[in-house]
Image 1: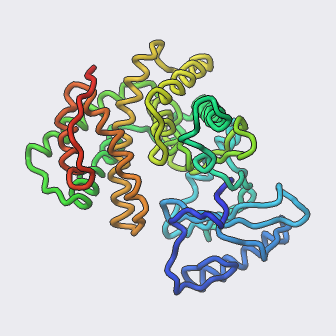
Image 2: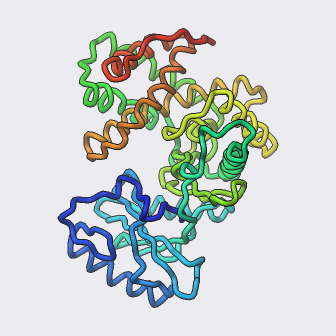
Image 3: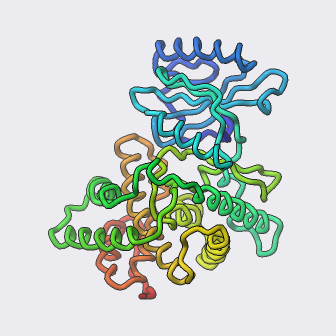
Length: 383
C-alpha cells in the first residue's frame, strides 16, 4: 500500500497530545500498545522488519490509521505498511475480501502479508509515499511538461479504473440500490443543511428534497452497473512521482459495491480535492468512454448520454459528500473537511442549474451557503 510519509501525514492522524508516544506514534491506551508490540515482534521475525523504523504514515476518515516500517536487507521493496484498525470500531473483512478480489484481477491493490483479525493489525505491501493528489500540478501551463504529466496520470488512473470495472463481482458485493442511495442522500439534510448550516427546513423545502432525491435515484438506477470502488479519487490512488504514466496503486476500496458505471469516473474527474476546467473533464471523460467501449464495458454508444449520466451521478455523490464532510467536522472533530465543502457545493450547484426540474434544489443550496459563500444564481444550461 502506498501512503503519504510521516513528514506529511493526513490531518486525521492528529491525536490528543497527552497520549503516549511510542515509535514516534501516539497510542490510545497501554493495552493496545502492548498488543501491537507483541504482534510487531512476531512480524519482525517472519518478515525481517526493522522495528525501530516504525513511524506514522497516514490515517483516513475512519478509525483506521497506518504506519510505515522498514525492512532489513531491502526486502519487500524496503518498506511495508501496517494497518491499525481496532476491531471495536472497524471490520476489516470487507477490506480483505475486496483486496483479494482486486489482486486476483491484476488491479494495483496492496498485497496482504499478515492479518491478525482478532486484534485488528495487518501487514501490507507498500505502494509508495505519494498520492496522486500530491503529484498533480493543476495550474500547469498549457503544453508544459507538468501538464503532460497531469494527462499521463489521469490516463493511467482511468485505465486502471477500466481494469477494475471489468471484474464480474455481481453477487460478491452489495448492490448500490435505492435504499443505499437514499441513506446517502439523507446525510445532506441531516448533517449539512440542518446541523452545519442551521437551517430549519420548511415543508416546501422538504418536498424539494424528496422530489429531487427521487429524480436522482430514478436516473442513476437506470444506468448500467459494474464494480464500483466508491472512493476512486486522487487521495486514494498512489503515484510514482518520477513516472507519470505508471499504473497507480489503489487503496481504500473496502466499501465497493455493484452500481452505476459513471460513479467512479465522476469521483475522479470531479474530485473533492482538486478542480479541473470542464473542458478538461470532458476530454478525459471522452478518453475513458472510448477505452471502456473497447474493453466491452456497458457504456452508452452515445457520449452525450454518457455525459448526462455522469452529471446526474455526480450530483448524487456531491450531495452525499456535503453531508459526509459536515458529519466528519461536527461529529468526529475533523474540521479540515470544511475547507473542501465550497468545491463540492460548486459541483452540485452547477448541475442543478443545468437540468430542468432541479432549479428548486439549486435555490435550496444557495440558501444554505448564502451567508458563507455569498452565492448568486448564475444562468445555466438546461437539457
